[in-house]
Image (tube, rainbow, N blue to C red; front, side, top):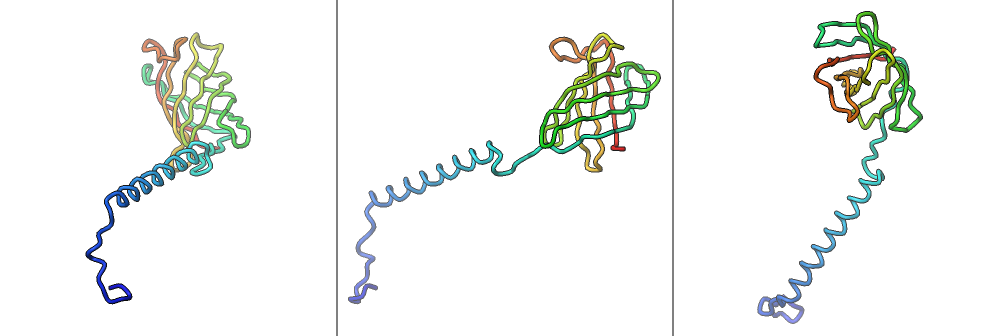
Length: 162
């Protein structure tokens, strides 16, 4: 009821006004989604700084083709807040492939390539930081295009921080 006691029900809102309001709301929602996308992509929201995994790690490596398990040690260098890592991988008796590596960590995924004078092809190691804090994954010898070579070494690895 209006102040004069009459109902406004006889005067519907013009369709043009309704369409204008709907278009404005859709535009506002689109602008908010666009802003959130930019904020997420630039790391302002949900900044996924890489985990710091620098240090000495020790564990085992298993060559599934040869059925050989050996010790494994990784010394990882990682500049503060950086995704890039480098260091030295050492495998124990029974396996070859010790050498220096470079790689990255992104969120909880780790990947690094080992250049070793002991083997003809580099080793590509990929893995994840596990819930218990250990690192584990798979490895394979790779060709020049970083494709796993089916005729050479491959297997799994697992290390814990020392």
